Image 1: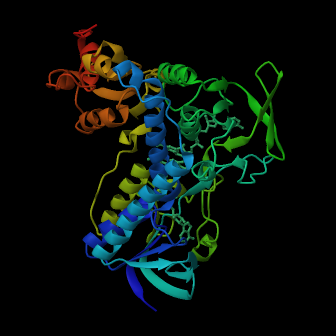
Image 2: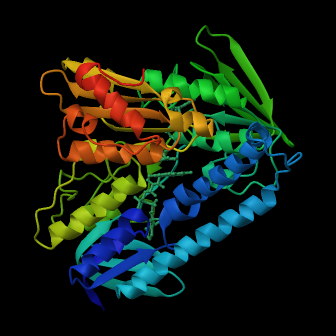
Image 3: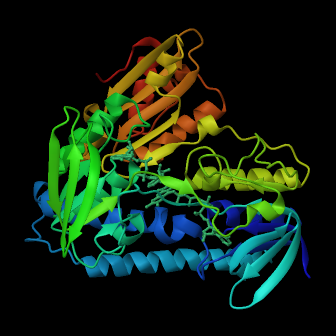
Length: 465
Ligand code: FAD
Ligand code: NAI
């Protein structure tokens, strides 16, 4: 039986990055993946394919609605969904091949098959053949799966999750989305841009609830402009399919019935940690009431040589959070003392305009009773925004009122997904708003909104508003 310094179960961004870091540190490393393709949710049915379709649909929408403004006449563009899906599949397979290359380059042994514990050092792999390997250390990186509601029967054809929404054969006539979170607004945007009628039913009184309300309202405004209909504070009570037709029955906050008829229903109400088939009990481990593997601040389970990372443990379900934790545990196993600050994991939504945040929001800080100042700057006041025509949104910098230290940044606007990196760097170095305000930002760029918001936060002295 082969014995490894580290056995990683699950090849998503948490697992494969952990395996690479461990191999870099000289550990004999194995990676187990139950599917044929490496890369997990993110590469196969998450981040990468959804962004490929967001980009294709964005081009189509620009060609249809914005090119004429720029003096470009392309006639009436046609969306070829089949081709978009084929392109997406190519992007995914190239990215997945890249992971295979990285495993070979780092001499990581890859096993394909379901990994399950035999005891706390031994893992059985049930694939084409059955193999058993041992690990001095083991990392659980088995990720997550979509959640549903007890009364919904996901037929994966017309009542679907994000996985099937990335593979649709035709543009829906009316897509009803249950849940106005990240997946709801991203995939809702894809099909709305391609011409589908899209309705979102959201339980809370706003969309993307992890962001400040002013940011979420700004996104709501942009999505409505795109044609998406919203039913907020509305609770779905039944989802029925008859042939090609889906009926959704819901209840609004006044108790009135809301009935929607469509041809596709996307259920995007969150994801749950995934440990099926892992046989945690054989390793002496259990899950908590949310189905997550319980870990301490060092991602260690109650067995000191077994760690868990990414979506299968507490915290944000984000690829870069999983990656950071992967590097973190590999270095801990190597006897180092790495650091990870979960408050500084950025959060991004790839709608257009994009939405991004890091640190704590204005509302959370106020609820904590913190004495804060907030500086905000509208994108429409930037020369760069007017040149491109992307004038929606704003950047908000939130600082400690006494020290001027940046405590959070929230933004919505063109390229916010990239702009947030500046706030992350600043906060990692515990910069003040004045530090950013005094740095030169290239003109004309969207990044000038970050400087202006910092100027507004530090001394209410934004220059261009
Ligand atoms: P996963 O990526 O889920 O990987 C877990 C792997 O473990 C899987 O390959 C699974 O097959 C394997 N596995 C499970 N059990 C076993 C077992 N017993 N034996 C062997 N293998 C096993 N995040 C972002 O940061 N940015 C985005 O833009 C983004 N977009 C997303 C879009 C969509 C539509 C979805 C669904 C998610 C998106 N996410 C995004 C979230 C991101 O995909 C996850 O946070 C990330 O993949 C988590 O990584 P992970 O390594 O913890 O788990
Ligand atoms: P989510 O947690 O982002 O949003 C779920 C939404 O559904 C919430 O607004 C919630 O209030 C609502 N909801 C819950 N129950 C409901 C009900 N019964 N009826 C109506 N609405 C209900 O979850 P989502 O969108 O499924 O995405 C899962 C996770 O995947 C995200 O939280 C994120 O971690 C990750 N992801 C990240 C992306 C990114 O980084 N850009 C993109 C897509 C997914």
